[in-house]
Image 1 (spheres, rainbow over the protein chains, first blue to last red):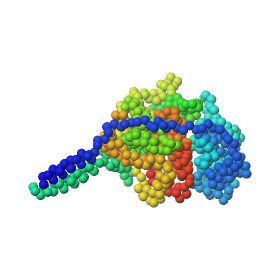
Image 2 (cartoon, each protein chain N blue to C red):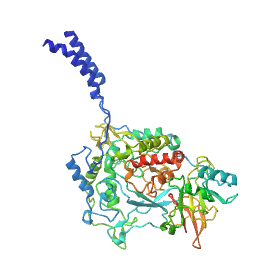
Image 3 (tube, rainbow over the protein chains, first blue to last red):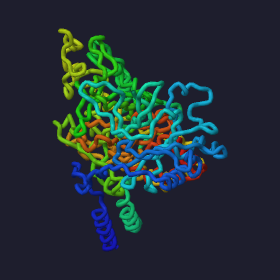
Image 4 (cartoon, rainbow over the protein chains, first blue to last red):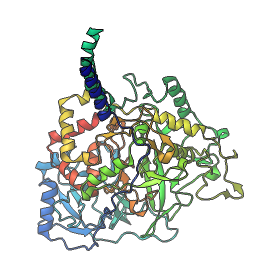
Length: 211
Length: 405
């Protein structure tokens, strides 16, 4: 009997020693992040021409027929508007009347925005596209294929963009002491604003008109 | 005696079976920051009475006699950290500016933070011409940040290394002020500019309220000017204006808060649970990481300046963030502690407590979760395309899940 007790005691001691909790380390062993990782460098930007077939395909991919070019060969421009090193596309479009509800859906895959701040207080709401209204669609590119990439699906539908010229201007350069609107992230498009010269630019959050 | 000897082996065998599990510590859930009546409750780091006293200091309104200014943004921590309880976030934003010369970012004269208020009209800061990089930054919640401080830096590195190459976050090391500037993995602030709550408190006390302390002993200038028209830019209170005690109390208060609790009713619905599954399926959880476990109690962190207490150690938290910097196409153009490569990178927003936010993303420019999701591009492009591919019903499920956080 005593032998059995001793054996049990030995077993209990062994189990306790074997499974006992190891004390936590006293200090963090900080180590540097994976040195293999470096931020991806965007490829050099080169604006290529936008063929009508490419444009129509991009509109189909992004808007699924909810907007179409305003003509068989819709006017468009390629530029790096958001300054990420990838080509973006701006093109004039309109929504077929049968697709207006989808265009204006709260959960649509694009952001509708009115460039005219005076419209923000209108009863109709500045985000509601109307029948027959001409819009400027902007599709942000995704490197390296730019707006042609199947992965490029971030898009904006801009209202009150009739004064925007579809012509790429390199980002506005600032001289010392020059006071302008917040820095455009990339290229800009010239625009007429209330009869004066201005430009359309990306703020980092939305499109805006600046002078 | 004989009977006792007979049962002894059974007792010992049972003990042998139980003892190992008794010593094996599974992480336990971190406690919630507040109860059903929205009363802040301590996480156990300090007593409730001490916690309430610390909260009063956190809520205290500073005046000119305390050293407020010469430039500042708020008179109390509470002004920016209030909704729905002290320590949480708010819609209040701060303004930052600087200049990018197409090669490197240069701070605005006096620093990238442009203070909105001054104790003297002469001292008022404004964005000077030539500083075209301008951005707002919305106030963050500090609830549960004691647990975040108690995360192993290596856990953050591990998350980065598990992320796909195109989505991999940047881990940066930043100075721990109370450890003489030795560095540790950054985790606090939109730029991960701080690694410890003491450092964060000293920074905020100076830059948001203009109160100096031993860790931040010099008052700010006005746009880099120490005198204007012969008038010194000063609050006329000798520095340091806080002897360090307030900093310690702010940090202790934040360390003693629980985590933002979920909306129990909504999160229990089938819709939210389906949305939760979609959150993973689409890939949101790659960066909005659900689970972390804090370091064991007794671990020394902050380069020797703090030891993880039992109330914060070995706790499971669900911040829905990775505490890493990413470029999701919304970058603010500002460089702080992370170096030039982080100019367009921002910390993944932890989504816990999201339902109390009306203005989303770092600048508060998105006012719905849907719009905020659509604003993601860059490293998040593939994930957001996954969201775009969801049906309206599925999007609603995912958004319901977000509203439960």
